Length: 211
Image (cartoon, rainbow, N blue to C red; front, side, top):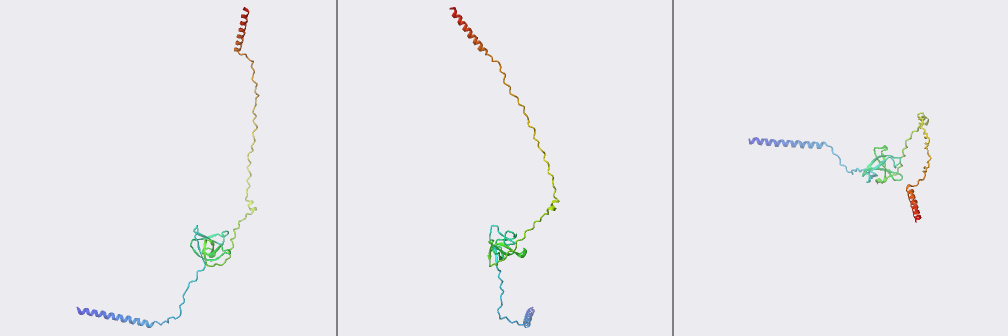
């Protein structure tokens, strides 16, 4: 039993040795087959990036964005887009007055647009660029008066009813009658008093004669 274990151990060692020799032989053979390269002695050039050029950064403002127009002005040039605060875009040039900056703006005709200089911070030197011509306003179509007259329908004026004022109303007037004067009447009391006075006066005369 012990002898069998020793034989297995020696067989393993021999097998490991053979594998090691085969690996060593393969490495030596492959090393001889590869050609020898010369190590360069000169300096290796380094690749440096090209400068980005001039650019603008949108300043902070109340609206939070800046309008981008098709030309350097608010009259005649329409808004083609916007840039948000902090956005950085390449700058291509400036207007003759320096109030507007031409920027690269993909997605519009020509790939360029204009932004007002007070809305951005300019970094770099910009050349002066002539502004594009103002777009020609659309022509308003004119109507041929002769042709238009054929479609005009004259509506006769409606005659309004006439108003005839009524005749004046005559109010009859009646003369005021004078009050009827009745004959004056003497009050009966005055007559009785008068008769009483006369009687007393006659009685007084009779008494005086009797004496």
